[in-house]
Length: 210
Ligand code: BEZ
Image 1 (tube, helix red, strand yellow):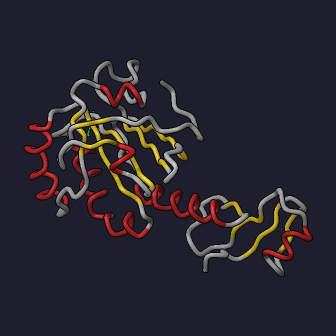
Image 2: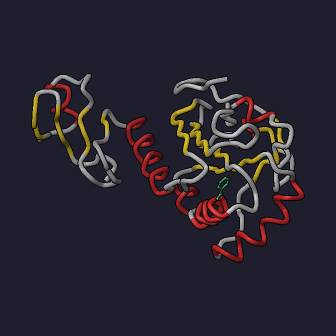
Image 3: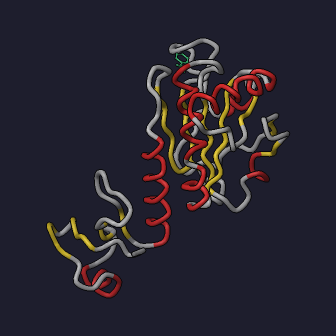
């Protein structure tokens, strides 16, 4: 099934390195990042999982739970865990789904047969507390993902859910933001006094969360 932004992220039950979970119950009240990697005991994946483990405090600060997935078995995940800790210095501190029967991979369309017939690609889904899909990303097996970018997207989503703003190219938390196009100048003046007009459709204001 192809998932689009705004769709409800399908619920599922799965075996993980932290025991069996029901996805919606597990993430209840939180944001979640569900991401797949092609296979255990592979180099790029080892670096990715260590990086995610090292960012735990950043995800926690954003009320976000992370959960990984591949079509390997629980036993393989357990054996691989030691390598991740040894190589990256970060022990796995989030659940890894053992999707041996491809139940979750198929639900989330994580196997792209023309890229690889059996392995998952590097998919990412950001899911909000209401279980809506807010970001989808697909990377090839040969390219490790930039997890700082996922933190940046979380910052943008959480800010723009709360305030009538959008975030410009390469925006980072704390930088100026764009006044929502749907606001008239009068409405914008009340919410963001002194905003700067670059063009009638491009108005800037300081990050309202600061
Ligand atoms: C890797 O993680 O390095 C990898 C995994 C599957 C295919 C190619 C590379």
